[in-house]
Image (tube, rainbow, N blue to C red; front, side, top):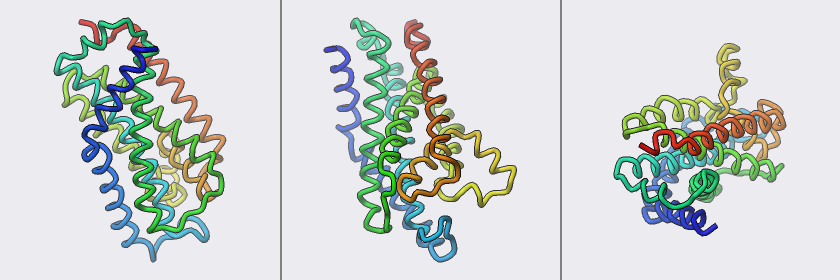
Length: 251
């Protein structure tokens, strides 16, 4: 386990040494979203009965921050290692593909949860939140961070330069995150867009996470959990296959 522990320590230290950029900056971005959208729409929108719009926004912003930063951690680490050439120092030690997978994904979970906790701490003073089902909050936060960490691992392995990784993030991760119900309930959408939203796995992560706070959700949280688990298992299989084959890692 020494190799796994060392790689995990290296991955956590990598983002912690620049915490201003990797943790503080995303927290400030989420706070700005809350202040702007909350101030503009607080008096005009009520999604759930008895829940103010600002309170509705907080869980979505927390989960959005968790997902985006979990993805960014593993993807940026791998692409930097590939471009700078220091990936060879990870491939040379007798690390199994499971150890590499575990180290990258766990480090992504740590960063995602650290940013999410920071967003929650700075926004809880602004919104009046309840905690109806706290275990759902923990489950979806962990699964969401793990799933996006795995997706970031896949993107980092596939990409050969920063432009490709940026395209993956800008044309897939960002739209899927913003169109997942962070700022609205899908029941406020026309029927076609409601149907389209149900094909977005990010929607189920945020909807299930929000259920833990208010006891309200657009779909059954058990259904959301099933969808997230299916996608997580599928992405894990792809990532393990890529690591085992050395896809775009061993040239």
